[in-house]
Length: 141
Image (cartoon, rainbow, N blue to C red; front, top):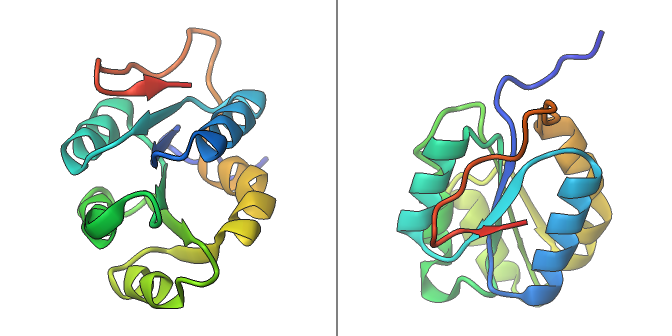
């Protein structure tokens, strides 16, 4: 018997449509609910409402608030796994995210390769009752 997480779902903070499509399609294929948010307030609400187990923060598209997003996610339950990713040329931003408490920090190429494993490892599959709830400011996958 596998050790299945008690929480479920993915909350992604990003503005890049390519990564939004990649994250949403991967999560849906693996049976995990996923939503995309664009602000710290929406992130906090989505984590609380959905019982997310995985938060993905695109440091490049979050702008100046990228590290604040990592800190906001870390303020939630300890079983929440926070992954921050950015372009490999932004080593300083990746280091700041690690210092802010992100569990995993990686360049975009590594993130893309590891995304299915991250979701499988940190998210409980949906039951047959449907997807996680979302609010108007969320973009459901």
